Length: 448
Ligand SMILES: *Cc1c(COP(=O)(O)O)cnc(C)c1O
Image (cartoon, rainbow, N blue to C red; front, side, top):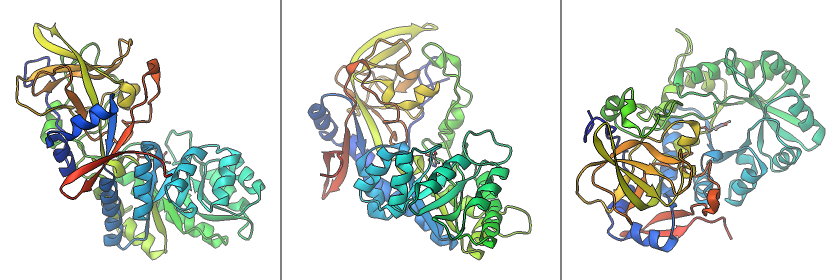
């Protein structure tokens, strides 16, 4: 049973970074920003991105592996994140000319870009080749188009893992054909192989990477460079504590306003997230008696690339809405509130995958009160447009004018689905930086 009866979901408080505690604990800052913006907004703390990059790099160093970190840019569009990558010496994984141009504008050099995505446009292939970016080739016809373009190009071949259903990558036969078709003294340099797996397990990534070491050696025998393996993204993020996650368990349908989401949930408690998961991958023995993946790549002088999106953004941002209305309803005889905020679930993408973003939003100002199960609705006319369909056990009753802060939203929640639906403005991004004894805020903007 929840904090406030059988119709309230159990609490799922998010892990909190010091900067988030500082923001929530400051008497004025959030309120001042909200007053200046006049609508929902996102907050980003790029220093946390820098720290996340450093943690991945440290893991590579400890394993004695030459690593390369490419930020999976689709996870957040903020210019300050790309800039943090550039300053920290990380590359960026882009999938279109818009992302490529934004990465270059943020200061990431062309040689530090990897271009993924299926059937890339002629313009994208040409720009990527011009800037010396690494191009993850997804299909034979794409390879033919890249070859015909003319300028020298650096290529990886994206692998369709055997037994997986995916629309991306080349199967075993196509891989062999691709390797054979590239002239080692021609314009295309075959630098290696890549993959990106769904799911968040370490072992399949380590095993496939180990298999690709063999493919690199085979390609080298044909005269190719083949010294890079990119294992893609999918590094987990730990949003909530183990005990809270266990209590949430198999959710009770009574916790939800209307039907519960059917799309399944992200594993919000993730015991070995981010850099720790990279450590597991590097330390994995692909087969008994063989070395770890780190041993294998070290022995053959292979550079291991990763493309973390979500994990580089862990605890690097929050999303803030203003409470615009509060009404009380009952379910199974228990009262709960329906709060309407000034934004939409387009700023919290999970709902659009018939799922729900589960780390609990926090009411600001943080003051004591009567715990209240609360559903969060959007300022739109869609019945289904709810930011939280479950009755979140808010620690007090929401009032009009309060702010509702969704934690840890930088990875995919913020802006992958945003649009000006209902002619509501798209929420701006606010960048927070430490300034002596306080936090200073500016608007996120491309460089001028
Ligand atoms: C989306 C994507 C990533 C990033 O995935 P995360 O789960 O955010 O780490 C990396 N590489 C490719 C090819 C992708 O499509």
